[in-house]
Amino acid sequence: MSLSGGRSGIQGKVMVVDDTPANLHLLEEILEAQGYEVRSFARGRLALRSAQLEAPDLFLLDVNMPELDGYEVCRQLKAIPRLCDIPVIFISALDATEDKVKGFAAGGADYIAKPFQIEEVQARVETHLKLRHALQAERDLLERTLSGASTILLQFVHITSPTLVLRSHCIRHIVHWVTRKLELAQSWQYELAATLSLVGCVAMSNELFERAYGGQRLTDEEEQIFRAHPEAGARLVSNIPRLESVAEIIRLQQTPRANPCLAEELRTGAELLHLAIELDQRIYRDLSFHAALAQLRDPRFYRVDMLDALSDYAPAAAPFDLRQIAIREVMSGMILDEDIKTTGSRILLFRSGMVFTDLWIQRLRNFARTHGIQEHIRVRVPRLDP
Image (tube, rainbow, N blue to C red; front, side, top):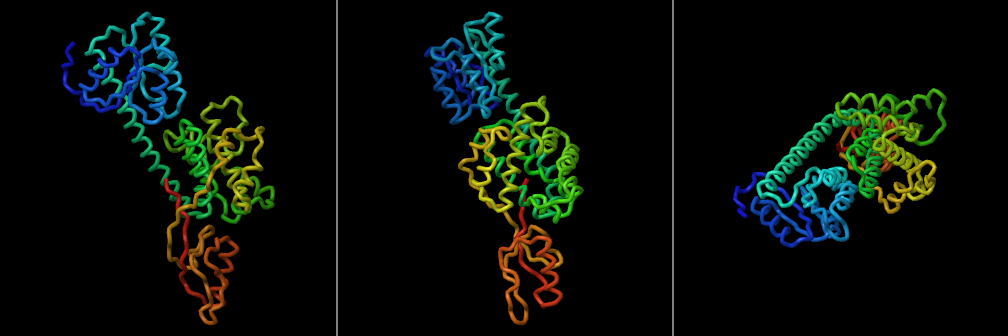
């Protein structure tokens, strides 16, 4: 057989699985002649293990193999979130219609019958790699576009309330941890929903948010205002194209199990966001993380696998910007980065590390008018990167 035809202009990693050494060697030669990086395996289990360590761009799978046949290998690949989008081409002597249908039902993208033509293998592999690269490029562009749009909302939150920024960072970190532990598909949607989960709170005062989030007593009207923030946030986010699912997850953050007909992807996102917010609220109320987690260990309300994924969670410190600002510019949620003393007698009034609330801001301004303190102070401002 001639391997002529020149190198493909497409780069890619191809994993070949075939229990016949002659076929394996021939396919290696065909693909390497095209410039692809090839890894070969005679058993499906070995291929599965290798793919989880380093994912290829495409699989070429024989069907008739010992231990696991190609159909089962494909089904297992499609059940692994980080591998499920990789195209699988079956290559088999079984060329009856029912065999091909079975391959597509297992998750295959194409089917090549043996004995195969070299040109056909080259053409189909190149076509599917081009499609995969095009989909990846489109996905990257979409994520950059959505990130830019969400950045506008985040900047709005930054201006409005450093407290919201700090809490949003903590919620997102919890969601990020669980999505990585459970290898959840659509993790970018879940993390973006967490980042924007409190954006509806910009419609209320910082003082009301802090009392509501801290579990303090509210009037009926205040409770109604706070409970309405997910709907307000969802309306804002739904105006961004392609973020309809993110908006729905935000809307359902307080009632993730209210709709039994909800799509599984949305239910998972809403349940995860609900858990992360409930944890963060307890931490905000001065509970340790593990004490907060213990309070939520009830399978009637929270998914056990998500709770278990957090058993070794380590809360991350939020990033901050250091700023020198006028006292009149201090906002709730900012953190004092220096001791403040009276200018004359040098009496300590406020200690470095204090988190400003509306009450402490008022006291600071009162002292500035009556006791003589510096006009500008150094503070740390929570930063929530998109």
